[in-house]
Length: 183
Image: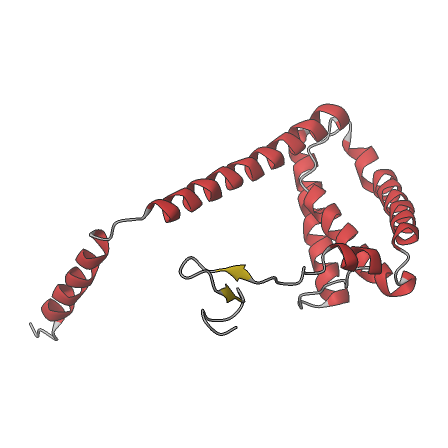
């Protein structure tokens, strides 16, 4: 049986793996990971409570509610160039169009699901997820889209001018954006 250096590769792998097991995590990284875990847990709670609320009120297991959020986002993306900086008018138009779209889906799909079995509800709403995702891909492509902020929102999020602060050393004035002593 020929040996093609498998033992050498295995020893190299063990040496590299051993170097990773001795790394200690600092407190900052640990706290960030704890906050990420809490955030992810809250996201899962929000998803589960949304499904529970929808099932409790409507009596339908709606797995496609995330697709409705996606449709609302693409509706805002499509309406933004038409309305320009008139945010409240765009918001009102988006609400009316969302209501009409929801009413159409209620009439076409969800009204037939109230008397059906839960499995049929899950299958229908999952099919809506697939249809909405494919329509999004066909109509808008797979690129990342963004909406520029309106004028009043841009004023709220404009960066504040930087001010000089005293350094910890001799009390000299230093620009926080540059290296120390560069002012």
